[in-house]
Image (cartoon, rainbow, N blue to C red; front, side, top):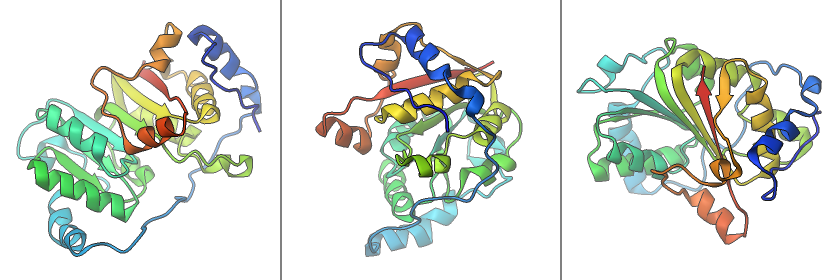
Length: 251
């Protein structure tokens, strides 16, 4: 296993990058894996059941259907993807603020999908489509360079070392991102787990397809200007944990 290297608040961005590169030769390719984690939680309320029955079919997207002109009732300027949108707070806020952008949200957790559907209905959004399931199957049917921006925010850290291989950030996912992000497109990653920040940075730095944009420590300590905090970030802040915000550009 590669040596974990924490992102220290006292360490500058250049030093962080050097630190994360240590041990990368011990990394081994990870094949396409099964999806880990819960697919549903507590019992759904009647309103959520209704949304899943009535609203989800209207906004659901099947693998292989990523043709922007046919997904929405308008021609989106760009297509953005959020992997694992949780309850959809960030997805809904971004879609509301960017009506000219088409949004794809991918989430396997049924309760989270129901929460996002509630937000779509509440805000009367026409620029969001939902994929309930594994993002790997979505990538497999996606055209090259289809996305301009991808969000991966507070994914499950799987903190035990024997479970690290279950993390969504893996060589196959990075390769899929390299194929489906257009040149100049960006991946935005956030976590409150130092070890996961190191894990992610080390793998993207090893990829010839991406460039980490940070030039100073403030770049990875500070969220993006239009950032919409998530409930996971609020939980981390309440527990006294800071977050790391990593930005990677497709070369």
